Amino acid sequence: METDKAAVSREEVRKLEEDFKMIRLDNICKTYEVGGDIVKALDHVSIHIKEGEFVSIIGPSGSGKSTLMNMIGCLDVADEGSYYLDGIAIEEYSEDNLAMVRNAKIGFVFQNFNLLNRLSAQENVELPLLYKKMTKKERERLVMEALNQVKLTERKGHKPMELSGGQQQRVAIARALVTNPAMILADEPTGNLDSGTGEKIMSLFHELHAKGNTIVLITHDEKVADQAERKIRILDGRVQEIISRQDIKDGKENQ
Image (cartoon, rainbow, N blue to C red; front, side, top):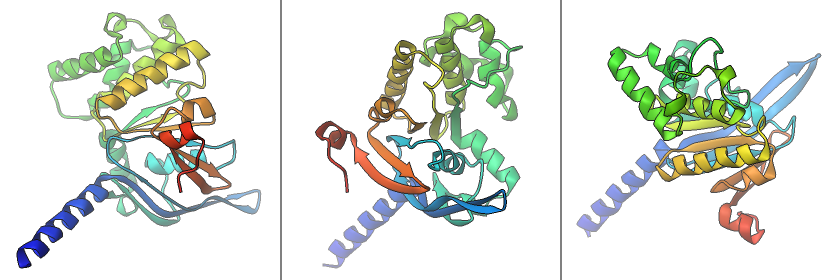
């Protein structure tokens, strides 16, 4: 019986370790003062995302999804609650430490691409690596691997203005991948693209997810949100529902 108890204990520890590695927000609250009024942007939000998941967060303008994205991306800190990213208690970190976490753990993809026009695709992708201690040869290897993942090696010497919108977003995704982050955080990644190009970018996210990448996608587009494994709907600073892909197909809510 003692052996069985020990086995159960080890299993419980293993489960706790798995849970600890997930993206984990517990009772997150965030308020802002706007024109003398107090606005509760996030109201006791709790979200758990396991390693390797593809999750979308959807809500209309003013719902709190952008504030939630800033929390997940370590761009802001909560007034109340706790946030663990890959086992790190974020609320205990200083601004300098948060910057280190962002560079090491999170790959950002933005709606407006946020590429530097004076730099080539290769140089834009290389930017996050300049903060790391590595040789130029090693940086070049990682950059080419990232560009290869998004099928854009032949455009490595082109500057953003010489690339289409879809190609610019692929460069941005390569830049997000180059540090091998714990999570890819994408903010409206198809928002500035036509529908056909947007579908190609979503196909790329599916390919990256199939390779084991954890992806959190912020969107207002139901069709985009429905492509994730789970869809988290936020409204008035609160999580309204969490729906799995199967539930999306069945038209049922996942309680």
